[in-house]
Image (cartoon, rainbow, N blue to C red):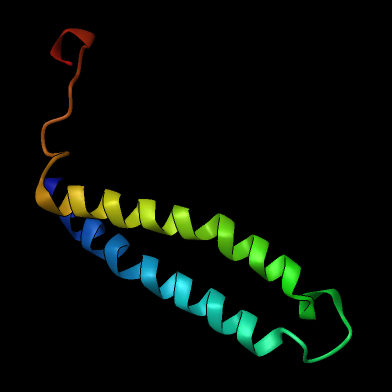
Length: 80
């Protein structure tokens, strides 16, 4: 189970920057290309502003998982 946690941690660390890259490239591609709402820069700024801290959190969570911080989880309140 611990090996799976470390593999998933590595996966989260790799996926987070890819998500941000695709969001930014989608914004660059769509802004100003037409007259729909998706071509307005305001929704893209909001979306990127919201999802960037989430992706950074995934990277941090993946780093700690890869490091082995989640190998032994507490089972009772007294272990915390």
